[in-house]
Image (tube, rainbow, N blue to C red):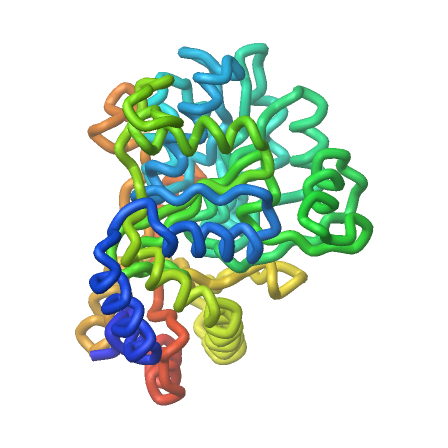
Length: 388
């Protein structure tokens, strides 16, 4: 069986380092809010080029706390609207409704599967306060048009960076806030390439084990260059407390533990190399899968705008293709079988129609993709797809 994602093999590459840092944490006797967390936050903000990284329990909490902080700061309030792609994992939307904000679903671009930015402006109302972009499957969702819209309507732009850590985007236009953030981080504002997680006003990052930068358990982080937002987010994750036993907000208990921070510090060193291997696997798929029944993903012009967290194809007879591959020893998954507006959790939306989103969810299939796939495994997947 060719595994969809062989986590044992991925982590085995760094097993000795992981075991050593685990032993160090155990021996230290300090398991929360210690030096390992501080070190990883320092490494993460340096890697992404932001001034603040606040670790938390998971990626959903990262997004929840960003919007909760905006509410606490008076920038948003109950009933305010946030533009969000209809084609996304449900966590993006849960983060909004959990804060009593109103998600406004917008269709994706059928070529990229990301939010169709050309449709955003027509969905903006006087109640709109933000755009939540999702870098789905590892592909950057960003453009000058997005920045222009955000500036024109004074909207916050929040990134769901759960799937795209390490992806980059060239900053083409002279955006004042982007220029300020780049200078603050010591980068050249005229030519710098920014990473996802630093493009918007704030970003939620996930380190779920299956992500390109995966912990050995749940973990997440908020990244931002907004000083005030960062202060509130950090307090919110610690019961709403900036100082022990003094609670300024109705907060959460959402903290990354020392051992996950230690693991992530080890694995961050190898992230860019692993992402580059993923790009090579994707290129090999794209160059060699030749079957008119299978629609391949469209690559961005700049290859580093995609880190291929997932390699997603489409076909009209998706379930048939899935069975064929699994019966021939290839594990595949569906990301995602049911769109958020058709979930029971949002039954009030079940009658809504988003035809592009629904088409995607009926047709997508994720092929094996990882930095530890062998040439033989990749070749077998391609051979089976070409014979289908």
